[in-house]
Image 1 (cartoon, one colour):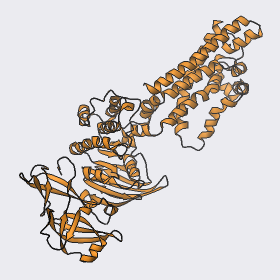
Image 2 (cartoon, helix red, strand yellow):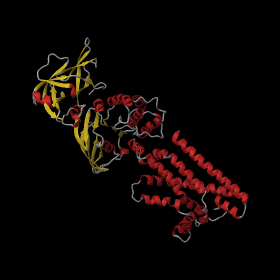
Image 3 (cartoon, helix red, strand yellow):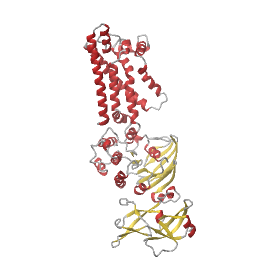
Image 4 (cartoon, one colour):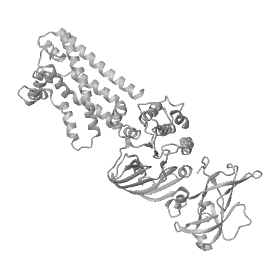
Length: 364
Length: 220
């Protein structure tokens, strides 16, 4: 499907919204931002549940909103997963799913049994929503949305109402979903972990405006954004498994001209993996360190220097031969002064810790 | 003695049916509308709660009388004038019992909020479809309460009936009028039987309503 073009500007319940962005017509897009930044409003406008005066929305070859058109929610092929599931209390799980099934266009959409199996609901069909756990309710809500044969799936913080336990239960389903679905998925979150695990594309919002929009790896490692200022700042990179050393149980990942070693057998040779390297786990050395236990010492070039506050600095490094290899190192202001790092300088980045972003087979 | 009872049941049954058909959309509109003047309509609907029944009956008598335009219209529709007829009694009862149906149903619609309807819309249910297949089923306890209150209130009405219906056996002489009649003519036994019957009936109605409402909320 071609791109999704979105433009909403206007006031809605005293909230000032002004956004314009294009997102890919496939894959998972995260709509990310702090609470109150207008994420939900954007999602509701996409679904037609809210309406701003000046809006344009084109999905595939349908125009759902422009100056003259406003397709009401019930005529849009959207699947919407509400933050709190929002199941119909007067119907059983099966009844909820059939509600969607009965109203979708004939001959379209996923098979009932397939969706039930995909979300592991076969044992719950006769239950009543009141007797479901939070995670179960959310799975039913996702299944219900899928059964309505949507052309786009919208999810409003599908995980936020859940405790850690239910989250861990539901994330694998979401990952599975993004692999089997051919329709675009837009989901809201304020959790970088969820973004890293689930998204391919990212739209960053702040106070009713778009701050950044692009492929996930680019946005996450953009040092000018507020994400880079947090203590949890990390670089998210993708690499291809190139070798596995049986004796030392060490996998080698090719990050595009630079090799990274990761302990354990993380996958088959040729698989693409997403890695997360905390900025605080990266230190810099001017000369190549020889006497060190750190395995991952990468040749790097300083791309940019971003001062966060009086004490801390983010150094943006490029590694390997591709622009994709962007690594952020968090160092102190004192070190910066001591070594007098300059943009363009070659250094060695020592990576203390690499974690795999748990994700099913990287297919993209 | 059986005639007033049957007449009363007929009146209350018919009134309740009409009230459910008219009152439910009205309650829906009152619960959903954004119009600034909706509370004025709400107040008019609620008026019979505070108005003395005789006042309501008096105005109905005048409004429906053969000399008023409304009365003229009624004659052309029903072929007879409305006061002192069963039809007139039904119209009076519908107005008199309206708030007892609209209020609980409106409360039920308001309590469910927008969310179930939004979910229905994203699942491609048209507004009408949502009303019948989401809103009404969710409002079931409120609908039950409304129906029972409307029925019971109509059974118990006296003032409006007396003003607009009079006391015509088989036509407008309902239970409460019959009791009054028996007492006037010092027929204590009959008055006792009818009154005790009403007492038991009222108790049963309220008990059944409370029990089934509780069941509906819990069991489904």
